[in-house]
Length: 132
Image 1 (cartoon, rainbow, N blue to C red):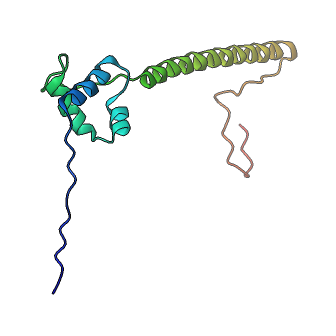
Image 2: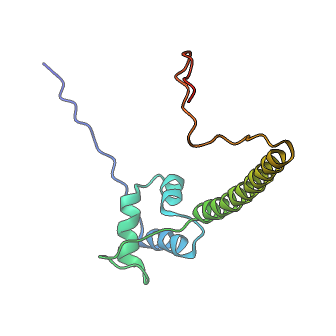
């Protein structure tokens, strides 16, 4: 005789006060849906259902978009990075202008063309280039 083993599914039931507290925590900005999901071991889909059901701000049919502090800090970090890169570009441009001026002064002083002329033939690698 074989044993018939049935798996009993555990289904948790949550009190309405608990659901409202979860929604209140989300709306106050203390926790994100993801944080609440990890904290209480509840699926984030269920939390979104509670938000649409009990929230006075977020209604069904409208997408809930979370702006976390981490997102704001990422934006600030990216703005800082842009300013830093602009500063570096400015320094490089000053260095380029300085070097171009030095080449110009050296050409005037020694009367030797230092800049590559556009009519100069390109090198073929190891082969000798032909002169004009």
